[in-house]
Image (tube, rainbow, N blue to C red; front, side, top):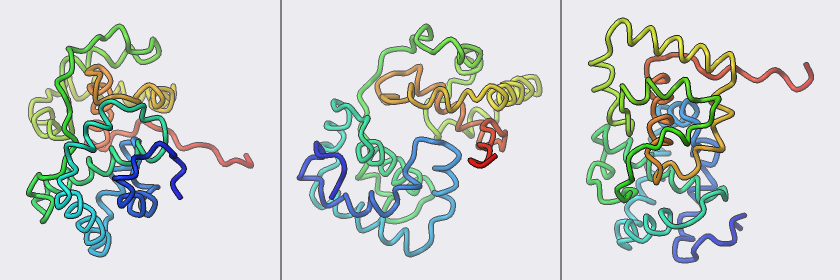
Length: 210
């Protein structure tokens, strides 16, 4: 049974796939990307079944409406957002049936970023987020192509500071609702860009018995 008792019963057919891929369906950029890269043919077949069932039921808009208005603190809600992101990622790779784009998170237009809402400990990321303007992972190639040597050094310095100050983990709770807050999306996908460039920004946790 799902832990989230508010999960709409009309979407309950998605619970098995959410439960099966729980560890990979995470807002942690590096972990999500590693999961997406490591999908097996069997995994893709399972995901394709879920994708086609959503398309058959024409549930994409209804799921999006619910996600866009609901409090997504509960685990299954967050995982559902990540599942739709995974479908989009597979579509970008031109993999069927995901390439059709029939199933996606339909996000309403968000107001401009309010950078004052970025927590103080993350304010040092704002200049880079403004300049690079990475709004989704589809913007990575454009940002990388336009990155100057000085810009690359700035990004490396920011990643190193995030590593030293544990900035990503501190920001993780703040990222909830990033689909409706432009400043959250810009900062979140800035981390995604760092990960795409193989810049390390999250230090491993020490062993529990250390």
